[in-house]
Length: 293
Image 1 (tube, one colour):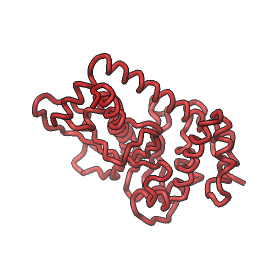
Image 2: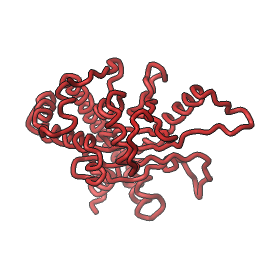
Image 3: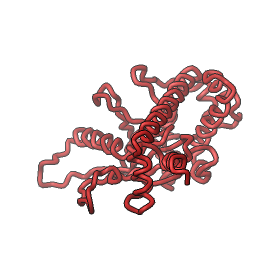
Image 4: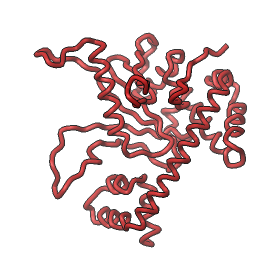
């Protein structure tokens, strides 16, 4: 019988968190870690979950974080592209380090160096904008005039596209992630002809018998459906916000100006897209529509 897992009703988890961020499913967390890092660790007890709950951290709640082999892993799942992930994950990491320092009773004011786990920041992207794997940098958001100033803080987030059919080597090395990817793709396909509730139900029912996560999801069908609906509605809302932002940008001429700067080599495509508040592919599409190129 599938093990029951509690869900925070005040601030709902994502399905990604439900699968990979719970103590009762450490084997899936470890499989994900090994796939991302190319390792083959087997000791489940070495995983120490550090995921933040909003009740404790004043409204801050991340998806999945854990310490393993002196590495502080901060994992976020994105159903829509977000160029602000570096600053978000920097804030998460700062809170997690604060928690670690207090738990270990480290003295950061003394002469002895306080030893800290290595931060690894990863965003698992399964949106529909077609974004590729990349490294997102905090410094891309820094405001600079002329040649700019040297910065003293940097944060890098590895964004991995986990849509079904992408990164096949990575997905095949972590069966639960591959099956989760399949489920999301099937729900999207069903959504073309079904309401979201029916789309989720049908996708779970159609999962192949040998899927590792199938029994678990069927055993928690109500919770899983609730999580999927919440996440799907969130993705739709973000899409509407981006479309509204694009229209405002067009009215103000921002996209044309940014595209000219990009074409002249004054700024990178990534920076132009960030300033426009959209993904690179969406920015290029909007610029093409406006300029007619």
